[in-house]
Length: 281
Image 1 (cartoon, one colour):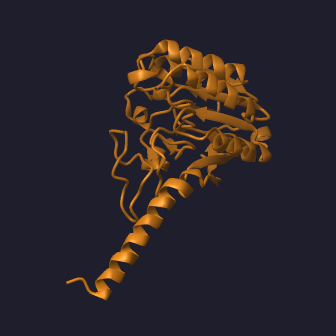
Image 2: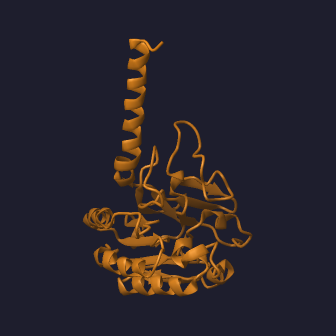
Image 3: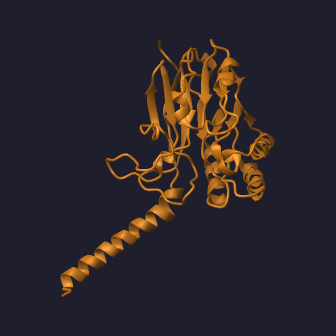
């Protein structure tokens, strides 16, 4: 027999579940957080001390993320006037050529770093099953047309800071040895690498410094005090935030801006705005 107390408990439970569902669907996926980690770099020029570097990651422009949300996020970042802007891949969620046209429209609003804007590709930028280099080429062209220096296993130095860009781990163009061979070993450097599992590859001899990554979305949903149950990486500790690696390297994984499924819980989207500082060795 259903008592009034049981009915009230069921009503409260149902209302709570509905509220959580609405929050994870309608609120947190667009509740963007700007974080301010420090980025100590060995040999950083004095002219770059205190400058800022903003990391855009996992925009996933396409059918699943609202363009207005991405554009508004760009506008918010622009007001901070970052000195460098880097994008660590997954510019789009590819379904058809419509996404490339959509990317071009949204990137008309892309904020640029006062000293430079650099990007790399992620697995979704390679189209279906991460195996369509022609799609990756069109994403590259769209980003370059928007003023981004896209690095595909290569490096560039801007205002005394060297950026090394790896192509995606799951792509047919992943060649970290090429990327790392092309750098100046004595230059202050930051590596851009979409998938943090690449940090465990046996290719990092001689590199000591930061790797900025994305890909995980922080798991998108994280029970309190527990690790996220779903992560698209082999190394299950690579969730989000800062990690110390072997070989005097450090890894920062952004939770990203967009999503593949419009649901987040306890894992807000993120744009890290790093403050550059000299590393005391």
